[in-house]
Length: 391
Image (cartoon, rainbow, N blue to C red; front, side, top):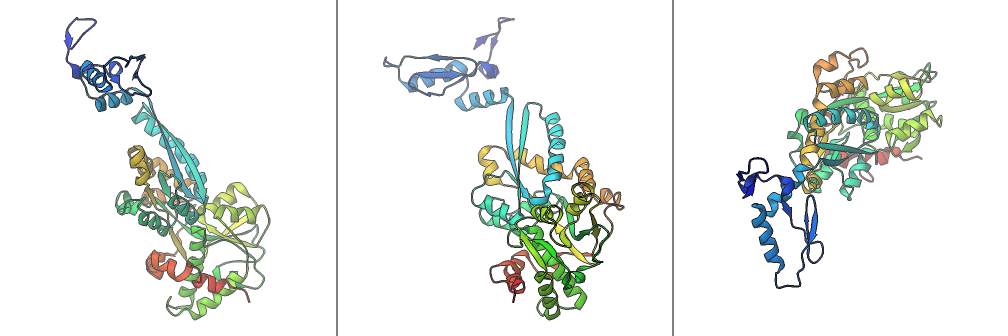
């Protein structure tokens, strides 16, 4: 029992202030540290380490675990989160992070969250995490990339149930970005198979966006020629012609944007709706136009906490808050302002002038589960490789 300095009353041990508790950390022989000061005990006597620890516990009236918890609670906490994401999401998260920080700091004034970003082709990023990149959260644009991390035991198998909308805060679609004035008169997917068209496309082996581009064109072919994926003779001919017009396969969607806008390659860039609008409004204003195809693919953008990392580091609560914040109204508004299609139907409806209605299809509805899609089209020697071969 300790005396209260003001009243002189005894304070039960469980009420001792955390700042006055002892934390025993024998860094070197005879060193005992507290939160506010340190002192040295001479162990030359027969007073053993166990006796010192026991004495410290008796003095403080609490065990070592409680002392460490109290000490940690007393100090302002700093948490570093790494968001490993796909290529063209960087602009959104650059603006979302301050929104999240302001809201989180208000609710948790003693905790500061530092958010770091890593961007690249979605599948390449997923492989990096699988191979050891210490991501706390992953924000991809393809379910198969998330499935890889589930198989590796890094993401929980029920990740889709952990957040609303099967953990998809927003969607997008594929559009065609052409030169200003559309000099080649490109109106739909079919035009990309013409002999006079040069196409810029990321590499479907490394980029989730590129896979959606390929599947978007392929789905259009099946729809246009009224074929099934099991017997796609006319669609395969169409896609083979389209791929023969590709002038570069960049590693990611942003690299493909650079090839089209800065290097001047190609007549058309196949890219996501949000990337096309950012290019038209910011990166290459007045130099490009957007063409919406008659039929395109819906892109789901799944997110998840890498629990294998956050559980170990004690960051799961902050990581969950970071992702849950994507469904907050300000974040959903930001998505719409950045030409992403928010899951909040009211927010989406309020932005129909910039996010027009378009007929889309879900890839799993046409091609089957993502595992089947990958095995059919994107494994080495799959249908993409077969159709992309030159003569």
